[in-house]
Image (tube, rainbow, N blue to C red; front, side, top):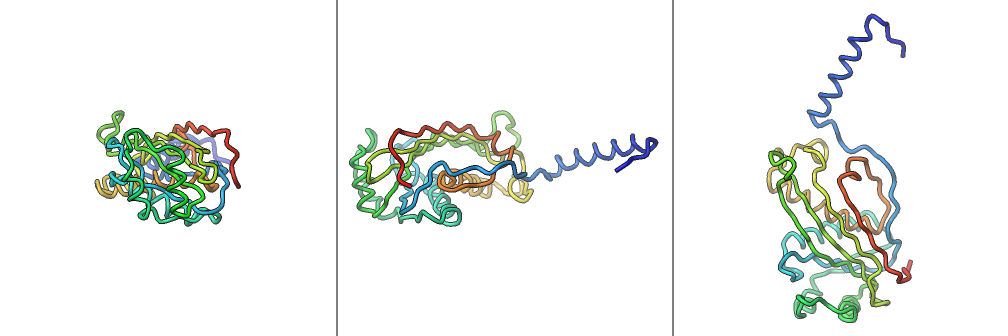
Amino acid sequence: MVICPALRPRFLALLSLCLSAALICGCNGPTIGERKDAELTLSGKVLIIPLRDATQYYFDSEEGILIADAAINSLVFGSGKLSAVDYKKSRGPIRGTVLETGLTNQQWAAIGRDAGADYMVYGTIGSLSWRDPDDPVIPRCNFNVTYSVFDVAAADVIYTNTVAGTYPYMRYGAKGMSVFDMGAEGLRTRALAYIGQIIARTFYPYETNDLEQNSLQRAARKSETTKRR
C-alpha cells in the first residue's frame, strides 16, 4: 500500500492511536505463538489427586480439588490416549496415611493399583494469592504449584514440574473480559481452571502465545525412569 507523503503523518498518528486503544480496551487476546509438544506421551488411565496446600493433607484444600477437577476436564478434551480415574475412591487410603512425612513410592503404587490407574498425578500448592505485588490495583492470581507424574507399574516418579505464573497475564482474561467484570469469584474460578489446564497440558500438545509463555516460569525435571508410551 502506497501512502501519499502529505498524508503520512496523519496515517502514523492514526495507527498509533489505534494501537493504544487496542491495549487499553483489551483487544490484546492471546495470539498463537507456537505449538508445544506433550511433555509425556502416555496411554492408559490416570488418577489426578487434588493438590494439597500448606496443611500438607490431600483432599483438604478446596482450591486443590477445583484444580484437579479442571485438569480432569481439560484432559478429557485434550488427550485421546488417557482417561481419568475417579479420585474420590482414593480419598480414604490417602487420608489414612500420615502425610507430614510423605508417602513412599510403594504406598503410592498400592493406591494407584487399587484405583485401577496406570499413572497418578499429585502435588502441592506452594503459594496462591489474589493481588499482584507489582500492580496491587489490579486483581490477579499469582500462583506457584509443583506436581509429579507417578508410574504405578514402575513405582517411581517419571516427571516433576514446578510452574509459577499469573492469571490473567494482563488485566483481561478470555474473550477480553476484564478482571473487574469477572468479580472475585469469577477470577478465582477461571484462575484455578487455568492452573488445572497447565497440569493437563503435560499429556497433550497445545498452542501457546507469547504473553502466556512469558508469564510462566517452568522448571521441569524428568527422571531417568523409562517412560511407557
